[in-house]
Amino acid sequence: MKQNVQNQQSQSPQKGNPLVGFFWGILIVLFLNWLIFPNLGNRQIVPTDYGTFIEKLEAGKIKEVMIKSNQIYFTAEDGEGENVTYQTGEINDPQLVDRLLNASSPNPNGKISFNQIVPQENSPVLNFILLWVLPGLLFFLIWKYAAKSMQAKMGAGGNFMSFGNGGAKIYADDSIKTTFADVAGQNEAKEMLTEIVDFLHNPKKYLEIGASLPKGALLVGPPGTGKTLIARAVAGEAKVPFFAISGSEFVQMFVGMGAAKVRDLFRQANEKAPCIIFIDEIDAIGKRRDTGFGSNDEREQTLNQLLTEMDGFDGRKGVVILAATNRPESLDKALLRPGRFDRRIQMELPDLEGRKAILSVHLKKVKHETVDLDIIGRATAGSSGAELANIVNEAALRAVRMGRTSVTTADLEESVETVIAGAQKKGKIISTEEKRLVAYHEIGHALVAAMQTHSAPVHKITIIPRTSGALGYTMQVDNNEQVLMSKEDLFNRIVTLTGGRSAEEIVCQTVTTGASNDIEQATRLARAMVSRFGMSDKYDMMGLETVNNAYLGGDTSLTCSSDTASDIDREVLRLIKEAHEKARNIISDHLDIMHKAATFLLEKETITGEEFMAIVQAQTEKS
Ligand code: ADP
Ligand code: MG
Ligand code: ZN
Image (cartoon, rainbow, N blue to C red):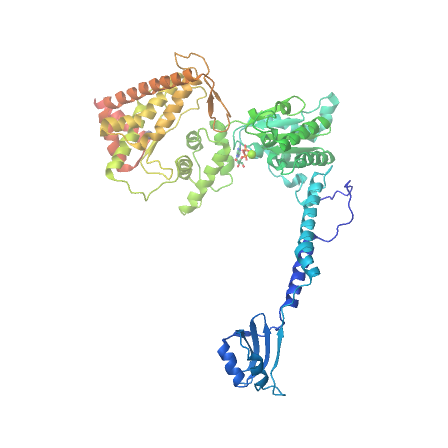
């Protein structure tokens, strides 16, 4: 990486690292310690008591005595003529000196050599240095170091790169292998991006006519729809340098650094043109500037810099900016105006064909037998590309677990359920009575679904518990993908959701907690019908709720007065009650089917939609 040399606040050559100074400090302290404390070499010191000392003294074994800060260190001969150094506490013994003078010793002159070391008072100068100058010096050095690195990070042009923050990652021409072939479906997006690829390949064609390419394209869509993937594919197709950076990387601790990074990114891009800049998750810096509590100076500065840079560069030079977000509504309007991100590329959740295509792209990466893509595609309505990729991988893992060498349709089906409802929980023990309740609950859903028009056919019913906590579930799979939902469709869905609870009530004369998820879903649907879809007579086409971020969970907020809000609740309740009543009627009218199917389900634990429909058919013909 290039080091910026023309740093304006050029400083005198760096004097040693402050850390080195710190270690010097420690060394000095150690040295002073060594001065103050007695140098006993590295002889081993054996602690002992005063009595032993006197004993050895009287036995004439002691060669040397040293008294220091209330401790007596003495060296004596042990049995084998070796010298051992002992340590003992000093006792106020006035005759000690006499004893030492009179005692005999193995020393050649027969005398014990002894002395006392008086703890030295540090000189006032030394004290001053130790207590005041040294710490002060340390703090000064640390402060200077911090200040300098901060200055460098904020300095004009900033040589921040030398501090290891790194600029945008630079990919060489051929380092990106992703192509449009890796992105399944998303044909509209690909079409729009093909133009950009073509421009980067031969700009002459466009320049002759006087057209300049859109400077920026914004990829918008729910998480996991392949935004990041397709941006890489554009670079792979165009075979130009690709600068990929995530929006959050711009937001730094120090104000001004983000802006410096943007400047640096565009400078590099200009040098490498034609090339692509890709800013992933741009909402991290591109959020509207006026909203929110407490403005974020750093983010705003970064955004302003980005806007300026986008205006500043020549569109004909061949620098294309791609950005991705799943929160387009939160972006600053200035970003979206023509001349900046003027092209918006929508990445939607895949439809049936799209899902099949994505599945087959990912199935190419694993060994598999002929797989019924249609079944899997239909069972995964609403899944994103990332989820589908995950499903294929889970299936491959399952195949390995089962000791097989290739993936089958059954593996895929099972992994779809694993992704939807969690893994099977075979070990869980459920009492017979509970099993019976679960079976009736699930058959209740299935029967209500089967007895209504405008309702997706039942695909599978199971009472094998799942790790997600579901004790069983009924899977419905639509034959064809519905884009529009009518009022009847939605209402029938609510009826189906209340079917489980209705079965508990009618057949088992009880209610259980098993319906909590049904209740949640039914309420959400009913509320949406009233407040967003204009499907109640009372509120006609009045919008009472808005969706906050369509791509992320889609939570809503009310746009009506609190009076109306409580009235909405009443309306929702009315809808749900009506649906519940309908479900109860269906079940009461077909109790024979309920018993027959539930018995069959209890026996098999998992039954297919066809098996269930056969029972339904047989019973209706009988009656
Ligand atoms: P996003 O950026 O939109 O959140 P990604 O591009 O990171 O989503 O997609 C995550 C993964 O999902 C990809 O790496 C890829 O494996 C898979 N994926 C998503 N969409 C597609 C698609 N259209 N075709 C093939 N794979 C896809
Ligand atoms: Mg992404
Ligand atoms: Zn249920």
